[in-house]
Amino acid sequence: MKSNALRSVAMDIDWSAQTILPIEFNGRELKLEARAYQGTDPTMQAMALIHRAEGSTDTVPLVRVHSGCVTGDIFHSLRCDCYPQLQAALKRITDSPLGVLIYLPYHEGRGIGLLNKIKAYALQDQGRDTVDANVEIGAPIDARDYDLAADILFDLGFPEIRLITNNPAKIEALKIEGIKVSEQVPVVTKPSLYNKRYLETKRVRMAHKI
Image (cartoon, rainbow, N blue to C red; front, side):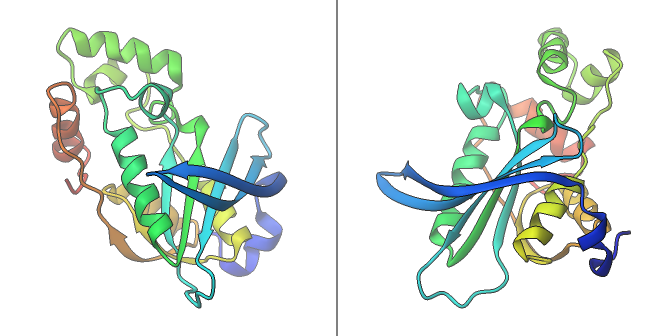
């Protein structure tokens, strides 16, 4: 485990930039602080969106660490719950006095990439669940790591967070990196005909709290 005292000299952040990003969300115009980060590996880039209510004195933010999903987040695929989870998390974050969304594009397909994800989808069409499909194509069941996410939280000055997640492995991974998760905030979405088995696999085989 990397201690908090060592994070300032052991960070994996190579570059960062920041601006103010106006967005439209649920009929509201919001201005969020946007920070982009690049790890020591140039393919590992991430964005943090921070919402701070004027006059708020909160010091423990509500945080969503969201794995990028081209099919879900952009095209609203019904095969996963990524888009509704992202929307639900954004609502909670922008309603909170202090909220942070960390978006990790390189986590596509639980870290196996877009091409392998579509290969796995093809096997799911033949009856495999998400776990068995990944194994059959020779990919890890879950290849994600949270080093950069933890580094971003430390860079923002948030060593303690309330985390929006159903995934106990994500909580443990952040704890190993030195982040204190003081509260798990669940995000429950409505199953559809297309993602019912996907959600059941996450619950039964990956211990997600859904």
